[in-house]
Amino acid sequence: MKLMGKKIKLFIPGPTEVSEKTFQAFSKPMIGHRSKAFQELYASIQPQLQQLLHTKNPVFLSTSSAWGVMEAAVRNLTRVRALNCMNGAFSDKWHDVTASCGKPADKLQVDWGKPITGELVRDKLKSGVYDVLTVIHNETSTGTMSPLEEIAAVMKGFPDVLFVVDAVSSLSGVKIEVDKLGIDVLITGSQKALALPPGLALFSVSKRALDRTISVKHRGYYFDFLEFLKNHEKNMTPSTPSIGHIFALQSKLQDIFTEGLDARFARHRAMQKLAHDWVRTNGFELFPEQKFASVTLSCVRNNRNIDVPKMIETLKTKYACIIDGGYGKLKGHTFRISHMGDETPETVGLLLTWLDDCLKTIGA
Ligand SMILES: *Cc1c(COP(=O)(O)O)cnc(C)c1O
Image 1 (tube, rainbow, N blue to C red):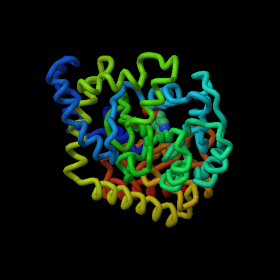
Image 2: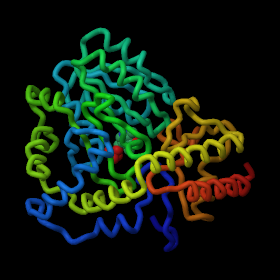
Image 3: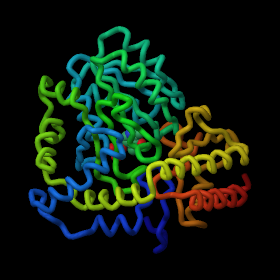
Image 4: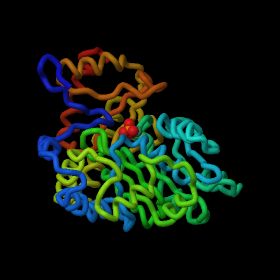
């Protein structure tokens, strides 16, 4: 984004800033998607993707945004009835999407900003009527991270219910051990914590989910998990993918493993701490309870009733940078500081000093 010829830096929770190195990989010359060169590219990133997700399951690449695969998951896996956990804009919408696929589904709904807990999940699943559970690990609209390990422990008691997790804004910012947690489908997108351009979704699918898929009718073609599997076995995708994205992903995986996973997770924790300290120092509160605050973004409650649009406008004109002014019904009542992807304690620290100045400028 440019303002009077100047680049506007994105500190929003997606799309996030994309590095020059990534853009260079993204713009490599095209190769044929049925060529040996493509098969080598596809095969070369598979081990790192599995390492990133801590899984032995295949990790498929979908040329779509994350919603494509979120829809695909309920469409490919629901035979009887889905339970959609809802605690924010994205998870609420997932329920509507399930219904629009013609799948019977119920809500497990809590207020925005509250986490989904193991106990809530157990209470609902006890009825025995569900065969799919969808949950969003990191509700980006409210900056709330639900306790995935606790939910996973409950899911072990319901082996017939497939466990579908959206980690669109958390994967690679925090450790998610797909196999250990028994996650059947783990979905992420390119433009959040992975800091790639938007347009690619990545997802792992377990053997038991693929077995279920065989018995589900009307899965469509573009997002049919079995088509992904069939092509994966040849190191290909079902249709022509965004090849630039896959080059960019290869470059990003190099970055991730050069930094090291633990160092990457620690960097995200350090950025979160800076943001939380700033929130407290400035007399604000986090929107979720501290214990469930997202590691990759901070959703700040506007308890001081400042003019959020004015603060953001000042940030944009003075510092050529933007943050988000609150999602949907939280607009003006919250604002969100993103600290994911390639950001560092230095860049986040700088942003926070700019915000200090903006608060002063608007007389808040
Ligand atoms: C951004 C986001 C999505 C949707 O991603 P798209 O790329 O727009 O399809 C879904 N879930 C969560 C938690 C998100 O943050």
